[in-house]
Image 1 (cartoon, rainbow, N blue to C red):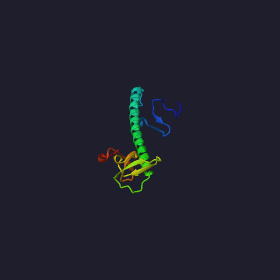
Image 2: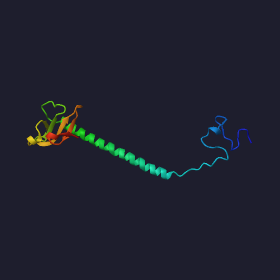
Image 3: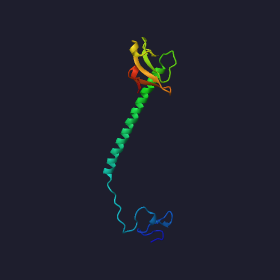
Amino acid sequence: MSQDKKPDQIVFNRDTQRYDAALKPYATNVGAPAIKVTDNSSWKNRNILKANKQIQSKYLELKAAYDKMMEELEYNNLVYNARYNFEPIIGESYHLYRDKKEQPFLSIIAPSDCNFDFIGSFKLNSEHVWKKVNGTDNGLRTT
């Protein structure tokens, strides 16, 4: 037997030239219990389903928030691109209509007081974003 070759039961690290059995995360002596590979496929499958359900739920939540934000962006662009000859006041409700040429215009006149083609009611918030308003004039609420 050559000097470099150690018996199989001896744990010798050739790279560091040291005996390192005590540093191993597993037992190295002959009398140690055998290392058995456990079948964890049922645990994996169960947790894969849980993780996928959680990720899918988060995705649907983010998608709903994205869809709402895109709808708000469309309304905001619609109102800002509409015709109006006044400076809107933050917090006040305004009403968006279409004229005979199908062009949008913003007005302070409520839908109940006119016969214009009504699109919707909007409020300008403190961040200068137009928010769609639901309800009647006496019970306006933003969505």
